[in-house]
Structures are given as C-alpha cells and as structure tokens.
Length: 152
Length: 255
Image (cartoon, rainbow over all chains, first blue to last red):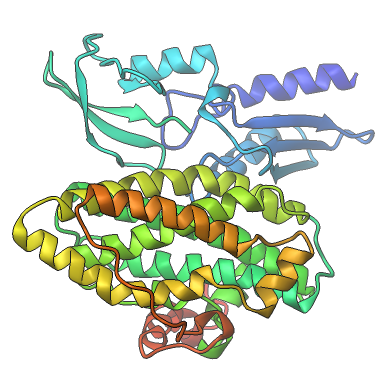
C-alpha cells in the first residue's frame, strides 16, 4: 500500500517543474531527498535547496505541496533537507539531456561544450549569471552566448 | 535541525557568524545596479544572495538555540546596533571597486577554512550549514582573488589604489583571526573552530594571492575593533537603519 502511494507521489513530483528552469522537473534536478508515507496516509517530502540563498527554494516547496494536494493528498508536509548538501552530481541523466536541449550546458568540471553547436571551443565570460546556479559562457565556433550550469 | 537549549555562548557564537554574513550581504546588495560592469553586478549580487541564504539558516539556527521563539526575521530586523555581533570588517563601506573586492578577499579567505572546520562541528545544524556554505564560499574566493590579482597586477593606478584598499582594510582582519573567550570556549566544546588554524590557512591563501597580484602584505596592527562583541564603528547604524526601516515602521508587515 505505502509503496504504491510512494510511487504515485514520485510520479506526481516528476511533473513539478523547476520555477527557474521549467524544462526540468524537481526530480530531474535531484532535489527530492525522500518520500515518506505515514500510517494515516500523511505524506512527507524532503527537498534539498540548490544554493543556500536560492529564491526558488520556497517556490519549489510550495509547488510540491500544491501538486500533491491537487493529487488528492490531504496531509502533506514538505521539509528542507540541508545535509548532505545538494550537488550537481544529483542531476539525473535525463535532467542533463533536458538542460542541453533547453540551451544550458550541463555541469562540467572540465571542458564546457556549447549546447547550440556542440563545439568544445568555449570561454567563460562571467563566473556568475542570471541565477545562482549558472555562469555565462560564449562559444568561439558559433559565437553564441550560453549559460553553463555551475558545478557544485 | 532540532537544537533548542544551547548555552548563551553557543547562541552568541552562531549569531556572530550569522550577523557577519547578513551585514556583508546587505553591503554587497547596495551595489546592485551600481557595479562598474554588468558581470560584476551579477557577481557581487550572487555572492550577496549566497551570503544572505547562509545568514538566514544561521539566524534560524541561532533562534532555536536561544529558545525564546525569535525567528530569522525577529533577529535580523528587531535588534539594536549593539546587539549585532558581526565582524567590523564587513560593515566597512563599499568604497571603490578595489575596496569592495579586497574586503571580499579578506573575508572569503577566512570563511573557507572556517567552514571547512565547522563541517566537523558537534553542533549538527551548524555542520550542515557549513557543509553547504563551504562550496559557495570557495566559488566566492575564486572570484575575489581573481579580481585582486587583475587589479594588483594591472595598471600603475589600479595597483596603487588596490594597495591602498589593502592598507585601509587590513587592520580589521585581526578581529576575524584572533580568538576571544567565546571563540575559545566554543572551540573547546567542539562546536566552533580553532582560529589559530584558520589563521594559518588564511595567511597562506592571502600571501599566495598578494604575491600573484604583486601587492605588498601590510604589516599587522593590534586588534582594536570589537564588532563581534557588539562594539561597532560609525557605519553599522546607518546600514541597519536602511535594512530595518520597513519592519520598524510597519511591524509585522509581509508580502
């Protein structure tokens, strides 16, 4: 019973988009730490914040809660899980693929590949970008600027 | 993060970290829309956001340790100047970009080794915040050190000006690096960190950056500022007046 409920909760979470990068779900980004189903059917979801100050965190928590309430769960608790700290290694393979498709280079500690043309000939323009999780790069081959999801 | 029932030293020590982050975040926030270039505007604003996020976690944690029902907002917006326990360095005005970035280097080079040690704190809440924050702090350090090198090893004017920033701000580092009774008590309890060891790492990092930047290390001065005990200079009051005005004027106001 609980396993079935948990699977249903996880399926619904896979449809909750990240508010800043809506092409990815909170599951793709590796933000869901746990799903616990209590005896009375109460659901608790553990969510990792990406950056300590990321303003999307409170929106994500609210979106997770309302998605489950809409799904018919009456008792939903969303808790923030700080330890262990979130890392970009938790972004799923599917998430990395979606990032690239969306035009954001997935996190890479080595050479950053241009998500537009696939060239490795890229340079970092700025260590910080439009959100805490991104840096600004430019491709020397197709000349397009693009975001790189920073390694954390 | 259940942590109710900490000692008053424990509360005060976490508050020192929280306030130091909060005040620096507020200072950096003043530059949003005013930094010399768009990339630096983004860089300083993102750094401020990380520091503010850590400050919120630390303030919440401090409030739980105190156990009197004060949350992050009560601690940030409803305390007087003398109750703020931030290091004096971070309340210094932004000055020119050299001042801002040197202040950031001196701070980042301290926060990284401090957080590294706090990941092993016996206070699990503090250890979790430090483990999350240290990754952000390393990124900030790469940015501030990179700029100090560019400005120091830049033109004659940029070198002279950034050397001046270093001379002006250096005296405030003594407070970050030297332990007082609360620092020693928290280190002995396994909650805080050994500031002598933090200082060793800080010295190595700063020396390496200054050497690359062709800048001279100022000579050390006696410890004369005590922001971490609530004794502040002339600048903090005005910063708090701006930060707190809304909650002071409309208590309990929210979005």
